[in-house]
Image (cartoon, rainbow over all chains, first blue to last red; front, top):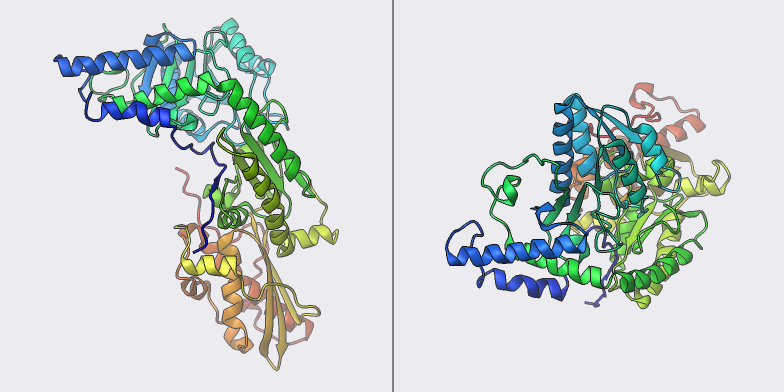
Amino acid sequence: MKEMKTIYIDNAATTAMSDEAINAMTPYFKGVYGNPSSLHTVGQIAKEELDKFRQEIALLIGAEAREIYFTSGGSEADNQAIRSAAILGSLKGKKHIVSSQFEHHAVLHTLKKLEKEGFEVTYLKVSKEGLITAEEVLAAIRPDTALVTVMFANNEIGTILPIKEIGAVCREKKVIFHTDAVQAVGHVHVNVKEQNIDMLSVSAHKFHGPKGVGFLYCKRGIALKNLIEGGAQERGKRAGTENLAAIAGMAAALKHACEHIDENAAKEIKLRDKLIEGLLKIPHSKLNGDKTLRLPNNVNMCFEGIEGESLLLLLDAKGICASSGSACTSGSLDPSHVLLALGLPHEVAHGSLRLSLSEWNTEEEIDYVIKEVPKVVEYLRNISPVWEALEKGEKPHLI
Amino acid sequence: MALYSEKVMDHFTNPRNLGKIENADGIGEVGNAKCGDIMKIYLKIENDIIVDVKFNTFGCGSAIASSSMATELIKGKPLSEALTLTNKAVAEALDGLPAHKLHCSVLAEEAIRMAIKDYYDKNGIAYDKSKFPDPHGDEHDHPADDED
């Protein structure tokens, strides 16, 4: 068997764990295994550790320890934040929510459920570059708006939204502001106080932490509502014995990510821009999302005349692990709602490729990707009747 | 990759009968780019026998594999036999397709049917029109979206 190197550039899907995170977890499987709710010494030692991690994490995002609620991950945090704000709003007769068209499904599907329960949601349009302005948010806020939920950075196209400005507008209008920061935390500077954020969702496995753990920051004074009823863990807002090992791993991963945030970003941006430049040499290709207001690790391209799933499978055969927003990869009939929100036609959106870097990717790997992607695109175009029609001028090129 | 059978991956990565036929006797194109898959089948026909067949496909792995397998199944066969090819037979020959990919095998069946119809039309051969429903249109046979 020919040994093939795997080039993993799908870090927006998940990351490998760092040694720091793994090492931080091991003491909590057997040594410090107590239940933090137990009154005895073994339990209380675990409780002290839990408090320590909560404090560490809070400091890293500019929050207070008691504003951090551990969850099973980003999706749970999104669900709980939005549901809580909706319930709080409805108690005051406020049943309107402002969000955007290109949120993560953890947000969008929660909002769809709320619509069925009588809430009205304004989904702000995003610009061609994948951005939303604070002015647009302001214009959408009504007297009965209970919540604004807009993501910090988009998971597919990597655009970074003006969170501080959107937060300021929400403060001015006294509307709760939640942001899904799953792709941002550990990658760009996040400070809930400076950025006027009331609620923020985080997932550990996006910054080399373990899967199945995350947290919700909820500003003091906003009463969270439970999704999970039971014991009094997490100040009574999230029942279930805390996964201390995972929380330890998350704290260590976040600390490591925040301590190296500028150096990692600089490294990734260099690789990112090299990738973008290299792949844009492919004729009829396009970068999705603003060129500079984007995550250091995100590249998202469309190649006309081909379909994303076959592109992914052929890249996988060359050892390149990537992602696509094509319908076939999303398991639905439509291509990615994010790409459609940018105004891309369906047929263009089907040919998308997302490459998301980590600081562990090397220049050599990027050179290989820049060499191989054009070959696969060319092969798929050669067997594509769509490409044939475009080249013969039977249909106009769209990009 | 667990999504597809080995056979699908084989036909996807090493497709049979890939290409075009100049001056083909029949050409069938089905699907639509908006939905993410288009298949184009070229037939060379002599004495009612498919002596050569080629395809071009825009689509996912299972669309390319379905085209490849379908062309294999009809190559060298009489038109009457090619017309009995079902999407089920294509999917089975590939050791199965995931449920949400079955429409790819439907496209393969339809593309062959359209190519044969094109041959009949070009040569003024009479045929039972009810056996050649027009697959063109916005809706092709996708499974229903089970959004709750």
